Image (cartoon, rainbow, N blue to C red):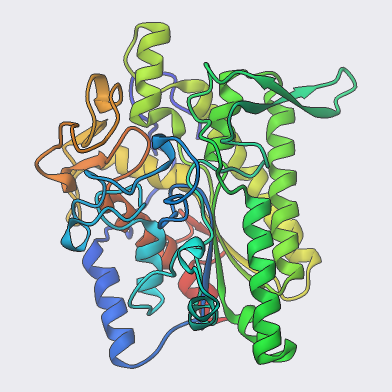
Length: 407
């Protein structure tokens, strides 16, 4: 499958997916049934990544408004219409996936657990470390300096820091990079070992799910000053490998990883194409990077699983998942009428003005693919979560998360 070169979104001509007709109710039923039987498929879920799975870690950080979602209209479909820090009209993919695994509520944001008692009460059930605006690289999302990947003539690479605050739309400030998220988790493991003992802690971690959704912000920043795509992707995947290996060394064994979706088709990048080229459609350079990253990520995970005893993983092909919805916007389980513009926002594609309490808001969020300029609606997150949880090999390899949990 190649990235689209036209004004249309990516298609799925070479794939079939008739069994992926799903809806939010399936996840809710699965969670209700599991709770009724007092059964969780895993003891805990630990979440890492960016705004696609953040549940409020950025609320009290020194970041720009673009890396916060603790104000209206965010959360308009959350209970009591509460803006919690989720970049959604309601729940995000992490929330919905853990429901499928039998949890009533999503693991809380690590930074919301402000006392030792609060951390201890939650640490054996799971915690969310994700931070909106963060990336696989340490400096992704930070102001005023962003990191650009450059290549030497001999093929090696360096990270060159340059001041481009005026050009970097996806730099936000005090975000929590993956390396810091792992440091927080390491501190948590130490607490668990002191409280429960090393052996019991190791058993719990080996049975838990480690859910990771990261890499998009690294691509956004690189695309602002591209150099050598092959080098960028190689270093991105190598850094990702380093993080997963570190988690393994701390006790993780079951990894659910979400690959990078077709970023060029989100509203902000459609607007980018319109401004730069004067034409409608997806921003192809980002789609090309997204598409090329998947097989590299898949190969890396397989290499690690072959090398590290007991490691198991489930890799969701986000590019394929989103492409399928673009190609099939109306099915028995969903009915999308708006595939390009954000529900919350203003200007072309709803992306020229930020989503906030003053922004225009669409009437029916369930018929929109995108909630704001960069994030999906709850309806799309439900499709993603159900596919990650129980999807077939068209979208999730080598197994889905339900199968991973039962190993």
